[in-house]
Length: 163
Image (cartoon, rainbow, N blue to C red; front, side, top):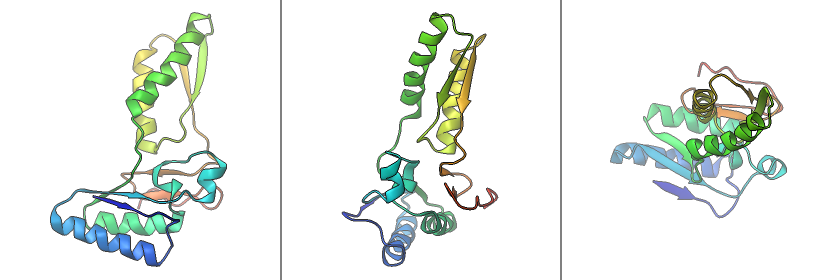
């Protein structure tokens, strides 16, 4: 199921509507609700951030994750990144470094979610056995994780991953 706003998502009225749609999706047996809206300032300043943090602030996203967990519905951003394609793109740069004789290569993982980052690291590690590929995690940038259902603030406090 998709809900697309043609403007910025408003913290109260729109998130209440999204919560209603989460319940409707659950009642209908739809396992996932994709959301889209105008990019928020943080996403514009960084070109892109992880998934739903492009369109929702951290506190609204935390509230929506909690609601979605209660109804067993997965929330996702309308435009998903294919982590295997991202890994292959990263690998080409790392392979070039290895071919030119470098003993290691560093690669970034933004704007991937925590789960997407984990998958990319697993793939890259398998493809670069015997050579050092170093994943870079940027702690000053917001992140989010599907399983933990929490958004990690880019500049403020970092909420517990425990839920």
